Length: 549
Image 1 (tube, one colour):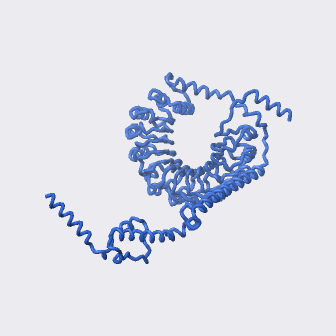
Image 2 (image 1 turned 90 degrees about the vertical axis):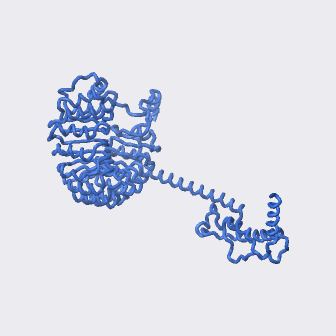
Image 3 (image 1 turned 45 degrees about the horizontal axis):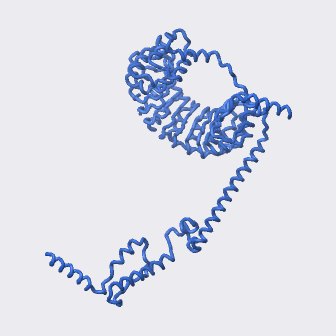
């Protein structure tokens, strides 16, 4: 058997040696296929008929010829992206290959130096512009900033002290009978802020058929506890019911418990914040019992899908909050909102389906609209805001935080049509420039303005606010607006006598010269770390220096 196998191998070798030399040599083809680039069309196949009979020599000649042709091909490189990248030395442009590695490296070094010079020129131009802006402000501190912060009011209000004492001992209180509803609401809010709203404490605010129940934080209340408490307070006397973060306890059981008590003719305000288990049927069951409802707030109720029942069940509604109710589609909103003729306040934050068409229909149907909030409604553009401004000239508040598609056109429309606009919030609307911001100030009625994260906010805006809104502006947020020079903040603080809150998170250009040198004693600057009580020695030294001057 071994002899037969050896004979077969010798026969195979002899057949290989007997192959005719005029057959094409195919062993060179895979090399060209793996080479990654096609050969020029004028290449011809190697003719090895005239070569020596020695197969090894012929094969070596074949590879040598192939190497020469490939070298010539790569020496005259012509890529498909040559026109696009011809000037880019980093991507292998023509200039780099013609000059060689040394010249290419030298050009890279020179290009780096040119880029550095351009950056330095840009920084110098920005510094010059900032210096010119500061010089244009022409502001000097009205108070010696070396004196440090103004003395804070050390004695608090007596009411706040009593409220804190009650919150501290809330579990020891047996009843709140006879306490006015306004004070009970403030006490309940303080208890919820301290996260002390337990089932035992809840009884104090729901017994004796109260007319107002306000619980901003209900996350610690389970369904049986909350259902029992709501059934206890659901009476014809109830006028206001507001529950916050009540998703854990408020669901179909709690809604059924309230509805079982009968009609709620006096209920005017209903808020169910974060009720993520509330369904359309449960809400309709509640609204049927409250025909006089005027304020309905349902933020973050994710299971709600239909708003078409609102015009039928709440014809008198004036305030509607559907923030983060992502289950409610735009078709449902289009059918319901234009029918609410008495609507004055509308919140649609966080709904990506809110469109320009919806805003146009709201403007046509809700002529009495005074406040609208469209934060994080990414589909809203200038066209929708223009239609809203034209249809609702009585608009007082416009909130459009993180609506990145808004530009100056929207603000120009608001400035032209809404002459009584008092509140404007445009946080991180990065396409807005100083032209649009200045248009909002022309009416002179702005009380609150938020331009946080808008790089275009600078000296023109500060000048416009100081000139037009000196008697109305109360709050201003310019966080992360580093283009506002410190002297212009001083001009604004001195000119706007009603300004009581200035938010400046991320504004590294602010120093003690402004913080302690402006003349507005009621202004609270939020977002900077200020030493509350300066050391006596430093204060004494500052006084001595002031006396010497």
